[in-house]
Image (cartoon, rainbow, N blue to C red):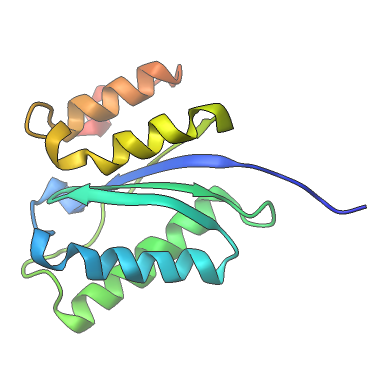
Length: 148
């Protein structure tokens, strides 16, 4: 018998100290690089987007990979790649932690649209408020001192 899964995640993390270093002109290069990381790990990317200070990744995660190792690999590899290729001036790396939230496959289209419209969304909402909303929506206990 084969193994069948649909492990739909939204992964969210920000730049170090939420520095607004990811310029729009070069973000697509970063997105392509992260897509390749996910492909190499047999994860299916549904949507990837972000703004100057954070990213959202909507992906199916291969069941042989832990979420923590996947995020670690994405952050380490992309940080090195950004710095080596001078993609974003003044980029100092990623924040230490991340948010990872699971969704029913029935919510996939809504989630993809939400991530697709990040630039519009962040004309009204800052990242910290968005993260708090996600934490509350998923019933995650948090300490606000770690959100700054």
